[in-house]
Amino acid sequence: MGIFKKSVSSKSNRSAITIIAEGNKLSGEMNIIGKMHIDGVFEGNIKSLDNISIGATGHVSGIIKAKHMTVSGLLEGEIVCDELHIERGGRVRATVLSKLMSIDPAGCFEGERRQNEAPAYPAIKIPEFESGVDAIDSLPDKITLTSSDKKTI
Image (cartoon, rainbow, N blue to C red; front, side):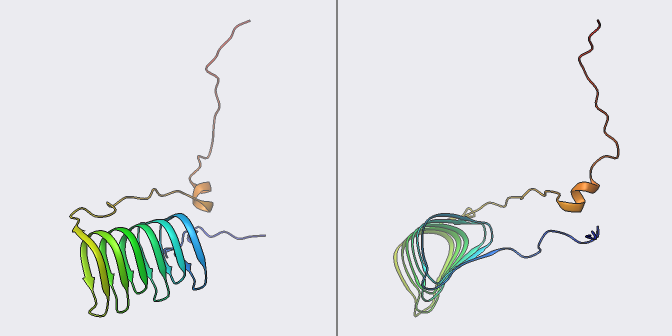
């Protein structure tokens, strides 16, 4: 038998983190809600509402759209973001559209950068869905069904 407490939320207060570990290779298209860290290889398109970081052993090639990007490995392709930071040892070979861009003196950037005044992702409100006990508590106490078709015989 389970005991439900109304005060306990089924929602997590933490955002999800997607990790592609070193030695793994993925290709395709990814839409990420939370943060992402890549130490392996990814080829394709990534869209994230949050931050993407590429570790020292990470290699990404494709079209990347994210709020913030931090690169310690290799990033090739096209980038749309609010902020791009190339760390020590990081290499970016791309066309970049960003509001801010910073490069560590030991980082490398080859490509074209245009300044973007609009945010990469405008603020959006994710709808709140009731679940679990909250959903049950929100149901009415009584439901009455009526027929709108009245037939006489």
